[in-house]
Length: 101
Image 1 (cartoon, rainbow, N blue to C red):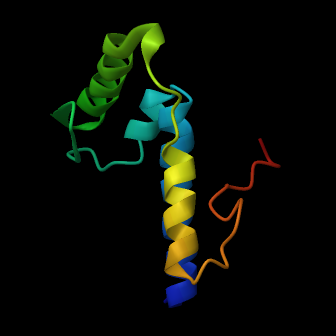
Image 2: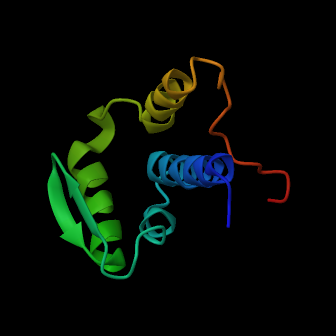
């Protein structure tokens, strides 16, 4: 059974991958993090199922066009993670290990 720290680390890794995929326009990769019948509900719309989630994310980006603001999902979540452990997480706490890529 994983420890609480291992569970938190695993959650941070999934959250980081979600943010990197969403901000990088890799919608199929982002949607793959959901269960097959997972639901994604945003201020811009909702979708259920991986294919629909990926399509909804693509549609949101297309509707925003070139005038969309810079994506900052990872920065927002890094800040929250820093708050959760007294600010000790610091920069890069949510960045997945990409050496194997």
